[in-house]
Image (cartoon, rainbow, N blue to C red; front, top):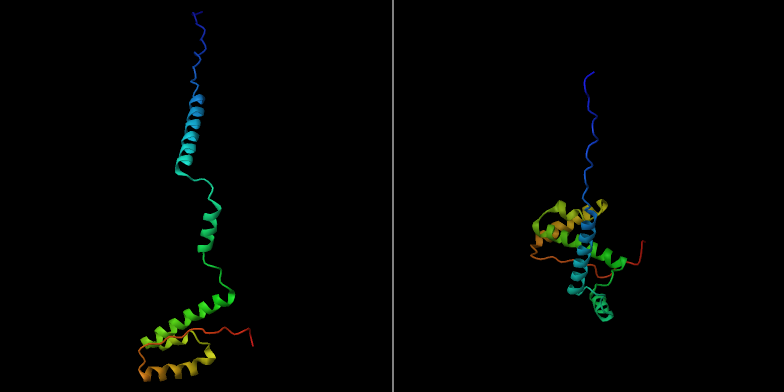
Length: 129
């Protein structure tokens, strides 16, 4: 019988302990963030600064004002179409049953040779009729 040697178990690999470095790196990052926070002066705003910032904000618009703004935008587009001589664009602001009346108005105003046209909402109606 041939001579056999017993296989020795592999040498244990010594693991490096890297977790202390991760902990140390975490503390360093936290320290840098804290230092940046303190040096940039991002403390809580003073009440006077908050009040002045709130006063500078525009007040919210009422639903009637929002509707008036939308109507004024449509009227401005209609005025540009009138000055450009574009009947189809002029009629987009009008309901289809009113197209005949608006076509007549468009032709009359164009025949007058107007150079400027401004229409704005002066008073919103109270509600549906």
